[in-house]
Image (cartoon, helix red, strand yellow):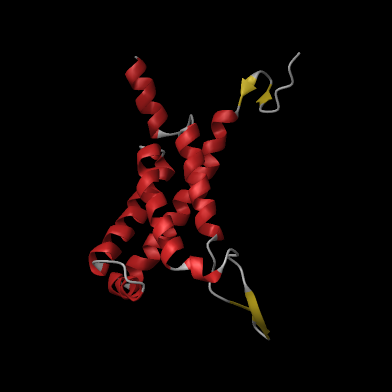
Length: 157
């Protein structure tokens, strides 16, 4: 008898795994896009200009839309493999233009005040985690509980 760690009572639960990645990564991208949108795309464009990203105003809006729409698509499990590509691109740009200068660690305690710790600028660790999660979703697919799975089921009938 073969031991199946992901099977309980004869049911295979492996297709549940992608939902956890989709929820965490999708929410993360939505949160990042929402902050950029509510604080004003022009402020994000200034940051992009300071690191010499071409056409910073257009790039700011493209990044915001990719993060918001891509994050929503991940949550829903819609076109996950396709949406992962521009999301990875935003992570690579952020990593190579900003976070790479601060080293690997995304959490840097640089001091302690009576109100708690003070943190320095984040490194590229979180970018790599997002990219790894997106690659995993591209390989495994969105999972059973996704719009992608519903579309695939409809095509089979």
